[in-house]
Amino acid sequence: MERLPPLPLKKSLEIAFQSIRVRFFRSLVTTTSLVLAVAFLSYTQTWNDLANSLFLSHNQAAIQKLIQTGFDINENTQAIGESPKQQWLMTLALLVCVVGIINAQLMAVTERFREIGTMKCLGALDRVVLLLFVLEAGMQGLAGSLAGAFLGSIAGLLQSFFTFGSLIWSTFPVVELLQTASQAVAIGCLLSLIGVLYPALQAARMQPVVAMRMEQ
Amino acid sequence: MEHAIVRTTDVTKSFQLGDHTLEVLKGISLTISTGRYISIMGPSGSGKSTLFNMIGGLDKPTSGKVFIDEVDVAQLDAYELAWLRCRKIGYIFQTFNLIPVMTALENVTLPMTFAGTGSDEANERGMELLKQVGLDQRYHHKPSELSGGQQQRVAVARALANTPAIILADEPTGNLDLTTGEEIITLLKQMSIERGVTVISATHDFKMLNVSDEVIWIRDGRIDKIEQRDELNISVGTIDEK
Ligand SMILES: Nc1ncnc2c1ncn2[C@@H]1O[C@H](COP(=O)(O)OP(=O)(O)O)[C@@H](O)[C@H]1O
Ligand SMILES: [Mg+2]
Image 1 (spheres, chains in turn orange, purple):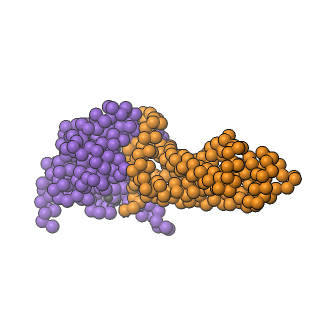
Image 2 (tube, chains in turn red, purple; image 1 turned 180 degrees about the horizontal axis):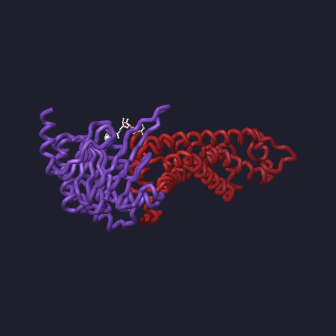
Image 3 (tube, protein in one colour; image 1 turned 135 degrees about the vertical axis):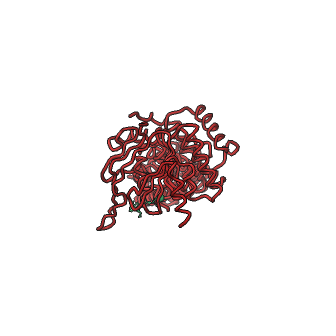
């Protein structure tokens, strides 16, 4: 007996993209928690990046401003990084976000039992189903993370500007800010993929008969 | 004798329900030869869908064997099974089961995509199939924008996508009104004649009897009787009397 050729990646991407596009509102809801978490992450880090660049400028006025704003600076301080409280908040935000994604993806799989079963009847292998879910989550993750990183960076920039005024332009840390933003995007995508893994595996392993009998 | 496209030998299927076993199929042996229109008739709960799943390679028998084209389905690995479902068999369901996010044309071309057919060829063949089922004007419509009968027509076109040897239909008229159901039956019969595809349809719809070459009556998980076309009129008469 023969075997099917592998599904071309372009086709898989098309199918996954269409699925997101048609269910746009639902995709938006699924992605919102990710946008918020990534925005929070990049906001905090952008703010820290800018404060740190001011600190490293050794400009007395800037350092006075930093101390006024509440940064804990003394003669031993080497650089301004995230405070333990900020780290804790960020971790918590990311954790909540992953749980949110898992929950949303589990629902998406449940909603689509029949669709998955039908695809399997038409010749989709387990790994095709897996790939489709992962691609969908990856695209949602990328879009959500980009939006989140953008919003977070803007918010961080605005807050710095209103706090420190034009001082920030003199030491504007372009490279660090871009690094921060891309890191936030990468973390967002990773979270999205972690969140979809278990639901997608569940969908992929489902027997067509079981899938067809559900919902009836 | 003609080539047997489907053969089952003493197929049984049991389901474990808590601490007792429900035996749904109790030894089904049948031989179906190529190109015929077969109806599997029986009351609701008699095990038609379960048998449908066995023949379609969607589920495994508890004991006994299913041969498609003289290949033992139980011996196939996941890849070969996917090929069988994609190329050899076309499925039609009571609930149509079109992919809701895809248009009629995309639903029809999906099995071709799985089979490795290029987009242009798939679209061309897809449109041809839609034309054959009379829906080429509605190719860009989503299932939710089509009536039940139209959705089932798309499903028929989809089932034919990879020119399968067998069309398996589980209660294809079960969710349709009388006229629409008749149209689908006529369509299936026409496809079976024009394309020489073997149609196996599980049903309790007596309208199917008119077009069937052979009727396999199932009762309580066993074959009650098998009737050829020329023997049918007699039993239809008896049904009408009841
Ligand atoms: N997966 C299953 N688990 C338990 N019982 C099942 C399962 N599938 C079918 N049955 C039972 O098997 C019997 C026959 O079902 P089915 O094959 O769907 O009948 P039909 O299609 O003829 O109406 C029914 O009593 C049904 O409840
Ligand atoms: Mg049934």
